[in-house]
Amino acid sequence: MVSSYGEGGKILAGGQSLIPLLKSRLFAVPHLIDIGRIEGMRGVTEDKKEIHIGPLTTISEIESDKVVREHLPALGDASSVIADPLIRNAGTVGGNVCHGDPSNDIPAVMHVLGANFVLEKTGDRRISDVENFFVDTLQTDVRSGEILTGIVIPNPPERSGSAYLKAEKRAGDFSLAGVAVYLELGKGETVSKLKIALTSSGPKVMAVDGLYAIIHGNTLSPDVMGRICKRASSVSRPVDDVHGTAEYKRNVVSMLTGDAIKIALDRAKGGRR
Ligand SMILES: Cc1cc2nc3c(=O)[nH]c(=O)nc-3n(C[C@H](O)[C@H](O)[C@H](O)COP(=O)(O)OP(=O)(O)OC[C@H]3O[C@@H](n4cnc5c(N)ncnc54)[C@H](O)[C@@H]3O)c2cc1C
Image (tube, rainbow, N blue to C red; front, side, top):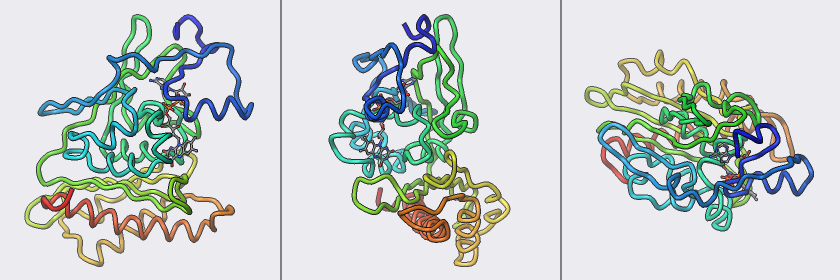
């Protein structure tokens, strides 16, 4: 049906982004194709190399999943701060990424965890990596006739940790800013890999580049932490609005970056999950 309707059909998963758009008449489409009950596209499984997430897994299921909590704690963090339990019970992880909203919390986490997205249509299957998947505001690499059928994340090694933090005006709101962090420890206390991505900080999820030069061979000393936080806030491109000025939001990014790194570091050392 997705292939044959093409632009005239729209996939409906949990409906938590699509239905509000349709109700407010911001978007209209002749056919809705409800994929919500396809059992084979739900659940989280792991092998030594990879973690496979079915796109129809609800945000609530992600939040409480054992594999996610143990290996992908940033994804658990993000899921637990999305909207409220009603929306988390219906909304799916696949819908969250396919909507392409720069204020959605899961894309930044997918970025730092190096996710790959499996896109299928009749007679064809391809992989879109996270660098290419998020194209622009409300625009992803999902093409006409395609369905996201799987999300594949490399199983993080020992001595790695991740975290996600967001600042919001009231509990359950979209964020003023959100920060996802993934790091791996090298020899001793040095950091061998650091990835950071930002929510609500530009037209799409914003990946923070230039980090390798800062961390290379270094421990997370106060000086290094200061440089990382400064780099993250300089990459963010927020706008002034009723929730705060762009300058205020850049400061929030800087603060959240420092706090999220500390949590990820603690997790990498085998501390609290
Ligand atoms: C009041 C409110 C507050 C919210 N707060 C937050 C928040 O704080 N943080 C946050 O991240 N999100 C928030 N959301 C958004 C919500 O979390 C997401 O809408 C939800 O995860 C989307 O998933 P869904 O299954 O409902 O997608 P749907 O609404 O069904 O679909 C969304 C889009 O993805 C496409 N799609 C869905 N599944 C697939 C698939 N498998 N293959 C291809 N295309 C697909 C649909 O065609 C549609 O374009 C909020 C929503 C509401 C209504």
